[in-house]
Length: 153
Image (cartoon, rainbow, N blue to C red; front, top):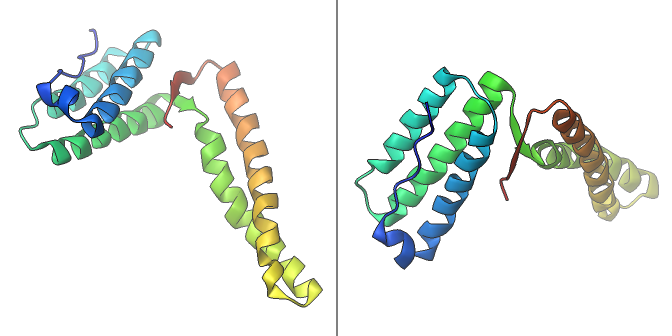
């Protein structure tokens, strides 16, 4: 069962704010087609795309619907097949590194130096740690063949 594509509307050409999310969703669908996924998952993805294609609302709501469809598809792939887009873990761990490692390190620096203005020193250190951990997880997923050739940014 092939995947359904996003139906082109005239407003895609007129509204660049609508064209960008539509283009991202189309590229996501193209990268999913390169992977071998079960027919049941293809059916669920087709239901999501059909919902976006049949959406009757105005452009601002259609933009939101397309983004919701993209997020739903990515969550479905992550949950059911453990397939992730490029740099998924890097983005996730960058934030975790800043909060879990960076803030406590900044507090330690600030308290040891007697000035909490140094609290911000820990954030870039935590960000670097998070990016390093995320990159290693992304490389692991790529080696296992569970990475989509698609970037969410």
